[in-house]
Each structure stands twice: as C-alpha cells, then as structure tokens.
Length: 454
Image (cartoon, rainbow, N blue to C red; front, side, top):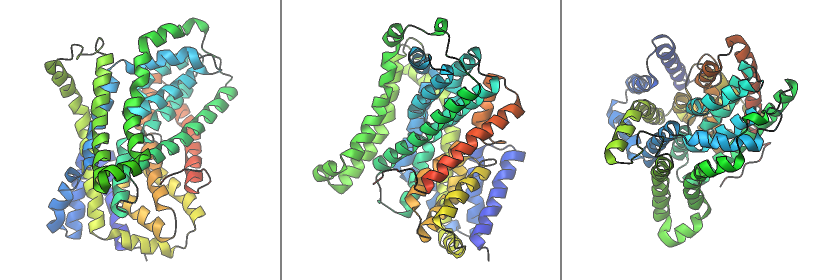
C-alpha cells in the first residue's frame, strides 16, 4: 500500500508543476506556497514559525547567499574573458579545440560561480561564437556549452551542494564536515568532467572537427601578461575549503570540536567576500565599480540584487520545506514502503538517476531536493545503501539534469539562444549528453567509480 506521505509528495509535485509550468509563477513564490500548503495539509501550524526561521539560523544559508553575490561579480567582470584568452593558445590547437576551450573555461568558471545556467550565459557568449567560427554546427556548439556549463551545479560552490549537505546533516548530524563534503563533491565533479572530455573527443572525431586557425589564436605571453591575475581566483576558494578539511584533526586539537566547527564555518563565509574583492580589484578598469569607492560598490551590488534575491529566496523556502517534511515524519513512512519493495543497490543505482531525470523535466533541482531529498536519503539508508553517497550525488542528478532536460532545460535554452540553433536538432544531440551523464551517475551511485570521503 502506498503511504500517505508519498501521496502527499505526489500531490505537492503536481501543485508545484501546475504553478511553475502553467501559472508561470516564480520558483521562490512556489516554494513559499508549498511550505504553507504542507503545513496546512498536515496540521503543523504550531511548528510553522520554527520551519520558517530554520534557514535563518543556519550559517549554510548565509554562505549560499554570499556565493550568489560572488557569482554575480564574476559574471559582470572581464575575468572570464581573460581566462578564455589564456586557454585559446594552449588547447585551441587540438581538433575541435574551440570545444575544449569551452569545456575547460566552463569547468574553471564552475569552481567560481556555482551556477549552471549562469555559467552557460557567462562563458557561452565567448565560446559558442568561437566554436561556430571554427566549424561546429550551431546545435553541437550549443550542447557542448550546455553540458560544460551545467558543471556549475555539480562543482562547489554551487548553492545546491550546500542545500544537499544541510539535508544530509539533518539526517545524520555531524557525520561529515562541510569541508570533507566539498572535497567529495570536487571528486564527483572530476568524474563528470572526465565524462564530458571523452564525450567531446568522440563527437569531435565523428564530426571531424578542426583546430582553431592560428590566425584566431592570441599570443600566449600577451594573454598571460594581461590575465594571469584571473588564474589565481580558485586559490581564494580552494584554500579555505582545503584547510578546514585537511587540517581537521589539527584544528580540533588546538580549538576543540566546537572551535573547529566555528572556524570552518567562518572560513567558508569569508571566502566569497575575499574572492569578490580580489575580482573587483583585478577588473577595476572594466566594471562600474572601477574606482572601488563605497558609492560605486553599493550601486554595482544593488543592481545585482534583482538576480540574487529570487535564487536565495528559492533556496531559503526549499530548506524550510525540507524541515516540514521531517516534522511530519514522512521519512519513516516512505522508508518502510521503500524497504518493502525489496530493491537491491544495483536496482537503486539505475532507478534513482532516471527518476530524478524525469523530475528534472518539470522541477528545479532545489525543489526536488527539498521535497524528496530527506525521504530518499532515509530510504536508501534503510535498505543498506550508501545514503551519504546518494546525498552527495543529488546535485548531479537534480540540479545538473534540470538544466539539460526539456521542457525546463534553462541551460540548454540559454545556449540555444546564443547559438541560434534548431530546436529539434539541439534536443536530439542533448539526449546524447544526458544519456552519458545518467550513465556516469549510475556508475557512481553503484560504487563502480571510486570516491573518497570521510
């Protein structure tokens, strides 16, 4: 018998789909209404305030917001253009070199921006025209950039990674530090990068792509002289993450358990601010905030709030919604039902990525994790599966696929708009990238591709 909690989730999925696809309401509004609907349907009004305030009591939400601000800083400066210019003479000589430039540039940007669609937009305006000029068909250029850009939802500091950590931490408190979580996420990102490299290599051979003409390649010495500063940007993000993860025992010895947790949280929260300040400084002659005065910075960041606040609000209410599901005891009910299906871990490794892929056609990744994340983590744990691994893979199975699978497919449509590609041809080729992304997810979830995590 299907549990009541699962039927409620199905009803909520329908509620969200109708509001998003037909009523065209913004996702932050839908998440807020979903929270109210769940509380009303389950009679949890006594806990409504606690659910609503829960994200505000977590440093994770403020860290996400800070990284969203950082992403806007990256998108609005010339840092990406400098990186692309450096990569051109290094890998542009390969067959299909423009595609590799797009892949490496988007991977680099993914470690900075934390946004899949934002990554496609920021990098695609440079790389898609370059690919088309060097022989890529519009649909091949669009899907290459789409797939590369959606790495932004797999590689830290993507907000959806912090959201999945928060949900897993509620399920198994203090079982893994945020630093170790992010390191494991980088390892997962590495497998998806390899998958994209191999896919691109095969497509370049099939379509007989040529290197970028020498006339279009800038001088490497000149490019490095003008843009070497931008190559240092990952240092400002990776060093705090690595220090909190690799020196955990030392920090506990010197600061104690609570002190180590406070240090890691503080280091992570200060990271985007320092990285943003550095980006503004090296791009000071190419932004509205070129003089770095307080008035210019306030004006610059004020314009960015219209993009940041809706995303932050979506994550905020999604986080609160996940707590409402925990409060109604949905996990235990769904776990019991899931166990009764007698699925083995191999079946789970195949079914779950396909399940989330289908959901990605109508629901954003943050909504999928908020509505189903806790239940799926608990259910997998109940049948003896690796719940932590599932939680780590949620961003890849939800946020990344959301941007690739029509009709939602924001990353795909952004790339298609830049490339001016045919819808049918682009979707057909996108299915190749999607299928191989799913295969990689299944192999990872089955434990066939190794990932080290604490």
